[in-house]
Image 1 (cartoon, helix red, strand yellow):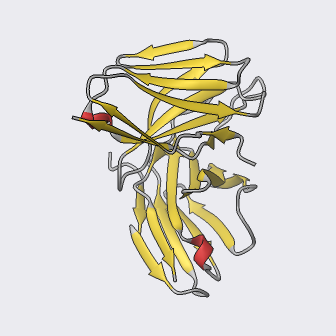
Image 2 (cartoon, chains in turn red, yellow):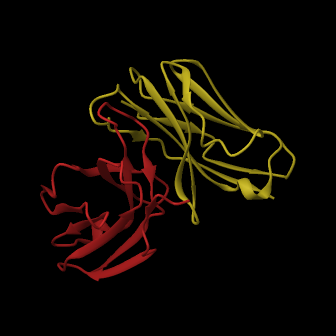
Length: 115
Length: 116
């Protein structure tokens, strides 16, 4: 049972345009969401996160939007650069009011930014 | 800092053989995680340790898988006997300590396992 779903295995965009990566989740107890980025032959690296008490978090070219009612989050990259080409993993955690290190990851979306 | 170190980077073995994957976490990190990446299931958490003690092994697929952390600087993931469906990339990650709501995990480069 996949609690975190990334339904688009791949996405191709032109350099300078916006990239939008989507993620859906099923567990209503998830209260913290993260995006990790992975280059070939490397491990994933943390990119950006958002708490369920917010609906938007921005860090430079990267913005994550959270729609709790739809159980949906998205990562926007503006403008997209060829160096952004990588696999992007969505992840979620349920803290139950405390703290947790247990992350549930999605299947990933391969982003290709064309020069 | 050298980051999380995993060995070997690639492993090819035959069905039925024992496979041991190794991980050295970042010095000073209290938490260590083992993940498996496949196309169908993405990144799956197999097990994680806090201060060398296994906390949650609910993701370990079956008894053929076992993990140990004999000290703060070393962990192993063992598959015995291995099967072709175990072919995947196995990642080790570590994090400093538990911060609300969660702590950043630092991943190693992974071990690509192929079971023939």
